[in-house]
Length: 230
Image (cartoon, rainbow, N blue to C red; front, side, top):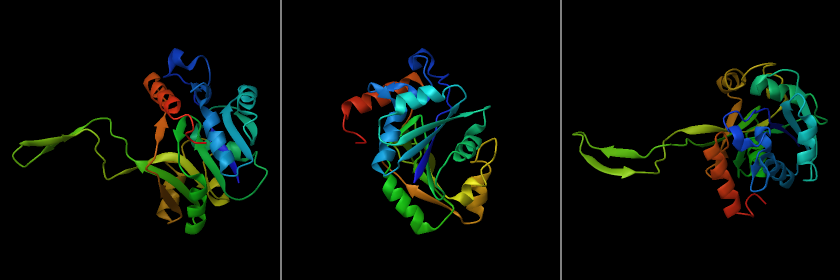
């Protein structure tokens, strides 16, 4: 299988913490953020990774992510195409037909990619998305019917699942991605209505890097777990 890595983020919310780099190349544990995804993909047997990035950044992505195992081919978008459009545009650079992994370049997630692909094949659908427990930024207060406080839960788990941004897509799904815009508003709802979209549940680590605080959390995690993802 080949893989597509979405790396068009501008790191605007990271500000000076990005060090002038594209968001997917900010330093986490002394290495580019996207290097962790590329190594994960290599461990899953992927030999070619297509990076969807902004035009003009192709060389820096290929230079920063080379030598990690897979061939890295960066594809610059001629204009901002959105995530769905970015996937569809990058997919034109594939050499192989069939299923493809898709990951966000600004996240760290320890999902079992081989098991994900196996589950996808078992379902026989057009696409499988990784879902994770919905992150909760606040603790919850436990009340009774009389508003008496019974306790607090600082790490609650809600009965909902969030799209974690890791997919396995068949040709059928790729062909239905928009040329510009968000697939989560078009393609995925359509496939779900047809019974062609499945989920793979992940309850491990999932860290998204959007803010300086997110960057510190991800950096601390990697430094505290030097063998993580290897």
